[in-house]
Image 1 (cartoon, rainbow, N blue to C red):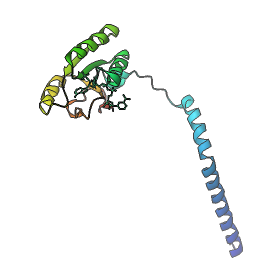
Image 2 (image 1 turned 90 degrees about the vertical axis):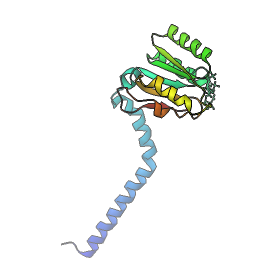
Image 3 (image 1 turned 180 degrees about the vertical axis):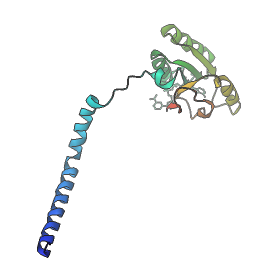
Image 4 (image 1 turned 135 degrees about the vertical axis):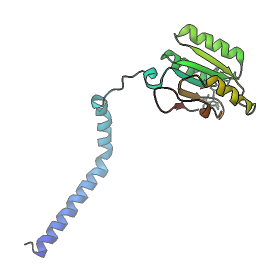
Length: 164
Ligand SMILES: NC(=O)c1ccc[n+]([C@@H]2O[C@H](COP(=O)([O-])OP(=O)(O)OC[C@H]3O[C@@H](n4cnc5c(N)ncnc54)[C@H](OP(=O)(O)O)[C@@H]3O)[C@@H](O)[C@H]2O)c1
């Protein structure tokens, strides 16, 4: 049977231990996080899958004839993805599609639309995209509300969206 003085001592000891653990956690958690981040690559299973294994064969890129969108298209094609190029100017689309196909062994498809020209472009987009099993969508142009017209038919259940 514990007498009250012993109970008080145990209580104080528990508070002391709790305070010590809390102090150590608070002061050493950054150090622990750094150690975990450094060691994790040696223990975590490495992702060996390629982009096509993860997302399927097709990516759609809007704003893909210039700037960042064009770079997305080239980078994805260099990793074996077929790309659907979506932009305004037909001549630029043809040139970029040709450049990609001559550089990489992938297929391209292009869709010329002006996202500032109203609702009717979306019927055209839906029709052009309905047979394409898209896994990645790169949005580099406007707030083009294209996502709902891209059916994700890749191996993943969700579309992977590269945002602007
Ligand atoms: N560059 C940056 O550092 C930066 C940083 C953050 C965010 N952003 C944003 O990212 C987006 C792309 O930037 P960027 O520098 O790559 O632009 P960019 O070099 O001017 O390229 C724009 C692309 O979008 C297409 N496009 C423009 N207006 C269109 C329309 N109404 N309908 C269909 N396609 C259209 C162009 O096609 P055509 O030439 O055939 O018309 C071209 O392929 C912009 O929204 C920009 O605000 C850019």
